[in-house]
Image 1 (cartoon, rainbow, N blue to C red):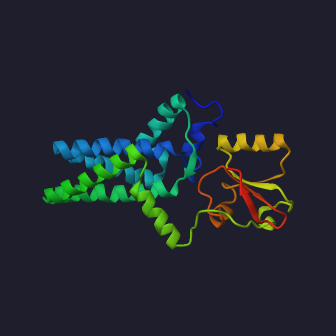
Image 2 (cartoon, rainbow, N blue to C red):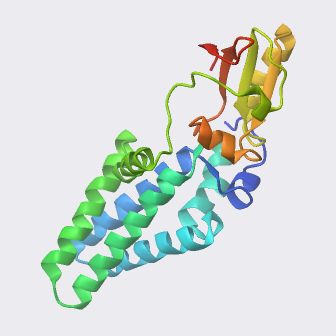
Image 3 (tube, rainbow, N blue to C red):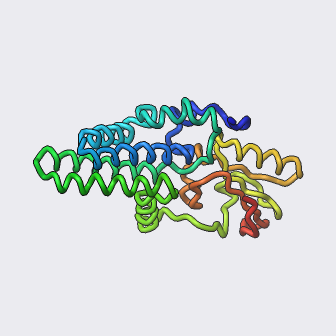
Length: 236
């Protein structure tokens, strides 16, 4: 059953590539896992080529050119509802790795190195199956490790700068990191308003600098702060 609070899925798919429905990459990984497994077991290596080209095209030109993604947003999401939004950078990085390995497998087969092509195809099949069945995306985890090394941090927020956020310092204020396509963000915002809680909202689509500064990769994220901006608790 579709989520009545979700905003139009087409807007998530085609217009804002900074976030993605968390279920979409997993659906794509399922397609890759099935295709790669069939290719490895039957020797039909051109399937690996098709999968690699598809991933490369979606990385270069966006999700609207990713056939499994289009199927997910057009057919699966309206029927079963939208998942939570997440930062699209980690799954995109995983797709880049997947495309490189799959196309390398193709080159190996073409060059006559069948064993190498088979090994690369099998590696994709195993990793994609792992991601599809358990949610553990090795490429995504690798991205997060690299991001930390580069200073794109995550984790708990300890202090916020009210001047940068555009709000007035007041004890008990909730700083809510939100996104216009996030239905859970809207629900939480309404709940806070109904309680009369002072709220400073930060749209991570418009203020990507602040999302990066505070390590916000999944919304909604809401913290309570005191008059100095020190975080005293986490709401969501």
